[in-house]
Length: 355
Image (cartoon, rainbow, N blue to C red; front, side, top):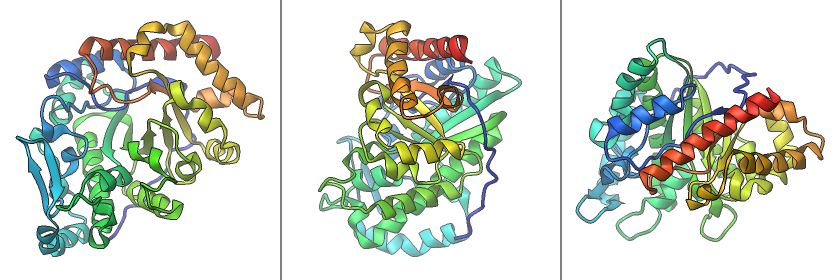
């Protein structure tokens, strides 16, 4: 497969700007998009709406074009028919080898927010935005969650492993191209959401660090803008930090101290221009008990841990973004909107205090 190499725009300093993870609980795409455009004015994202339809489930959403993929909307089930997959492999690889990105497009039924957001951004930000963020499900999580007809994770099927990675890579490439075509922005940021990286090192995830790094780096290679990885729990952060990723998004509210343990890898990541996206605002009822001051106190405790190891606080903050700890798709709309409001407030407080 011919992969288009990207020209990095590093160093880039986001200066603690706020953005979101991806999923939102709204049923109407217009409502979700308007809220994002009004609240996250510097770095809006197109919202995934899993409550609107099972087609917007974070695994089903990127399934169009996957050979043998089956969906039962009435039961909310998905799986891969491996016989049909094998029959479709030749056509699949022909499209991949031809770099036929359009063959891996996402239709509106599967991502209404992706199609609605451009018009909303044009209405609110006619000159464009500094950053426009999109997301796909990463290859590790996609491969572990989607199963075959025998309920075995598809990534452990020898014939399907490479399909999963190339499918995610082509989907991400298509999403980025669509974003560039429809929304003017100074930069584009493509995230690969990897919730199942929390299982790395356990018996559940039978993959080596070399495999995971290889999967992710292959996906990053097709992206011309910034790349990101989101993991909303503890993991072996050295694996993600050692990929070519530009932005690492982590749950700093619950698990922030875990990242600080990887001092050598983190220093190397920051020194090459890497960006930390601090998920400091909890995506749970816990947010009701927090205000900007308490969230800042928690963040500053993590920064103090890093500065005690010789890291420069200003460098870290300049190379930071602020986000909720995870997606908000399973929450009540009012709670989700409170979470985003506090995310922007923390960002403003950091800028006023330090930058």
